[in-house]
Amino acid sequence: MKEEIENLITSALNTLGISETKFIVEHPADLKMGDYSTNVGIKTGKAKEILSYLEAQLPSGVEKVEIAGPGFINFFLSRDFFTRSLEMISENKNFGKGEHAKGLKVFVEHTQPNPFKEFHIGHLMNNALGEAIARIIRWNGAELKTASYHGDIGLHTAKAVWGIMRGMEYPYVAGSQAYEGDERAKKEIQEINKKIYDKSDPEINKIYESGKRESLEKFTMIYHSVGSEFDFTFFESEAGEVGRRIVAEHIGDVFEESEGAIVYRGEKMGLHTRVFLNSDGLPTYEAKELGLAKIKKDKFLFDLSITITASEQDAFFTVVEATIGEVFPELKGKLKHLSHGMLRLPSGKMSSRTGDVITAETLIEEVKKKTKGNEAVALGAIKYMILRQSIGSDIIFDLDKSVSTEGDSGVYLQYAYARASSIVEKAKGGLTQESNSSTHDIERLLYRFPEIVERAGREYAPNVITTYLTELASSFNNFYAQEEILGNKCRLLITKSFKVVMGNGLKILGIPAPERM
Image 1 (spheres, rainbow, N blue to C red):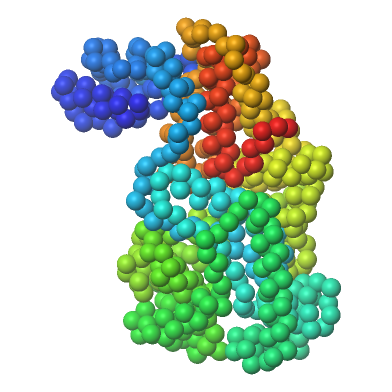
Image 2 (tube, rainbow, N blue to C red):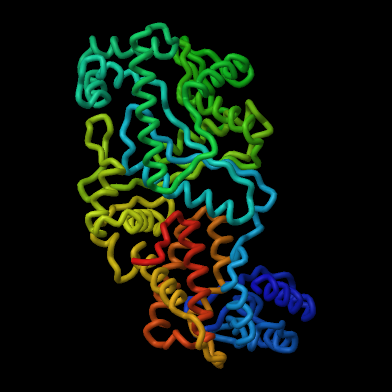
């Protein structure tokens, strides 16, 4: 309908001889102001002339148009439009499935926990965002693959292995502290790091492989509990070797030697210099990212590769993406880094080096205590708090607010869905044929779902869907409080449609949708 209205306005401008004007068509914030509104009257100063044309050419589904305020033109959809809309939505034949990304091949990489370290609440935040963004893109028609990328090699693994070899209770923390405060321990850890890379020490290999396997098994359990699956799992150990070879092949044209290391001079691109091979010839994170880009394109020749990390890596990705574009010109413009803020409890920022880490499991268990042990509700509460804000925002996680049933929470959405499910289950026979003569506010929201998901996909913004679902749940609860639903065919149709839209929305966000609560 939005596209039809936009085309009608363009036709009006052409017919009236009004010069080409940029205008917008959007939903008014106040439902009383109609279903769509345009600023074309303000932009042109010809609101009355345009209105006259529109009134004579009203498309099917539009009941009337009005001028409001300084020249806004508001469109009110018809009762027939909403009746047809409800009939379509209630059938749930892929309602809301978009096509704006159809034909695109998209890679989404997210979560990225490192073996030998804890899966903390930062990883949980990244997972919730990454899973939602992947589902939004897939819902909009793209062929999509997901991946998690594990840092299974590097100094952090050497620090952990050093701690394990000495029987430390928290190996990585002990190794990190020793590395920073004990010169002898630092040299020992550096030597372990080299041996992990070249696999030259059987004892170290055994400790390393065992620790890596245990970490990955734990990560898999967490993924299962939060409803996340990956098509591919990549490792820095494999990406590092690929990256090292690529760097070596491009010394002189993309990279150069500097004080025994191999660097990329980013200044030529208005950026800064970064090291890709250190003085020991080992690949840095930058070289590993370069290798990962090749591995990804070999596995799945993408049109767009999205990597989701914390915002503290913005500068890193700016340089690395420029470098990848020089090495692989066919990937230039096809890499996108989405950065998110930090998730904190009121106690402040975490540090895995000092052991001041809040694990994902700890947070889930704490929220479960507030939800009488219901893990589905707890996960809904956590994910909602993460997805309700724009992706770049920091979040202070409020435990009590996350489980509130008063609105603006995952629990609120789940309760509304469960209530609708209960009504639909109870409604069997005995329905009147009464039709709606007026339009309920909730009907004015339900049909918007496809537009909402498309916008969320274009903007990589799960919070657009979260905000919409919260408004929709509030509208349904008001509808439920004011209307007798059971026995009335039309009101039941609204309830069924609400269940479809809310269920689809929760599914896209990765929030469980329990039928009973």
